[in-house]
Amino acid sequence: MIHYHGTPLTPRQELLNLSGKHFCVSYAEPRDADLCLHMAQSVMWDNGAYTHYRQGHAPDWDGYYKWVESRLAHPHWAVVPDVIEGTAEDNIGLAKKWPHRRDCSGVVWHLHEPIEHIGLLLDLGFAKVCFGSSGQYWQVGSPQWERRVDEAFNWLAKNGSLPWIHMMRGLSLCGDRWPFASADSVNVARNYKDMKVCPERMARRIDSVQNPIHWTPKPQTMDLF
Image (cartoon, rainbow, N blue to C red; front, side):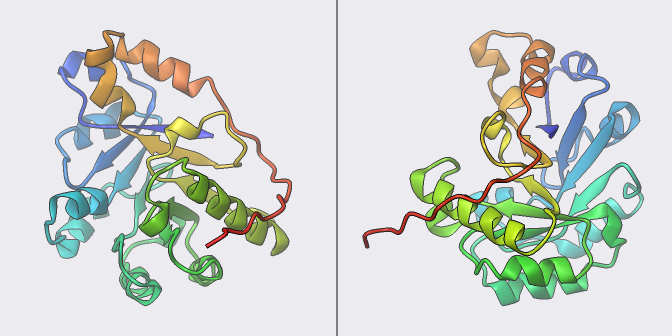
């Protein structure tokens, strides 16, 4: 699994000490974009939908398209615009409007959307599918969330080889049972000062923990209500 560490991370020297890591840079907070592009193994360009959702701001998708255009090439990739609490139709519409190369892009499936919607997104030709926690599955790692992700991987395994699945806000799941190809988190940038630890050492420990690469179908536990 590739571990994308969220930015911004201050002071700048501490970010420089993480040179050679993989980074996630959000359009909602892009101050470290150029530096990360210069020193990272790869960069995940995030569309900022999570920040917009939490702060109640309207997204500027045209601005995002322009911002990411010159930064999009292998091994770097971008998250297609999405509406976290939107409908499957809302998000299919945004995916179809994406103006950039799809082999360097990941489209978001929200956990409250129908499982079969994953197949529709894959049919659009995107290289990656990002799992986004939403609705009753907002809390990553909750019992409801775990059952839903089990259900999604069961469906994927039944329908062929697993695609590249990225888990949004998912580095806390390192070492768990799901075969995510990558995940991101702002854990290091947000918490290293309070924890009084070196951010490079903290990131190195996270990077050393991997997930399985295969999925064994799990029996489904039905909710009582």
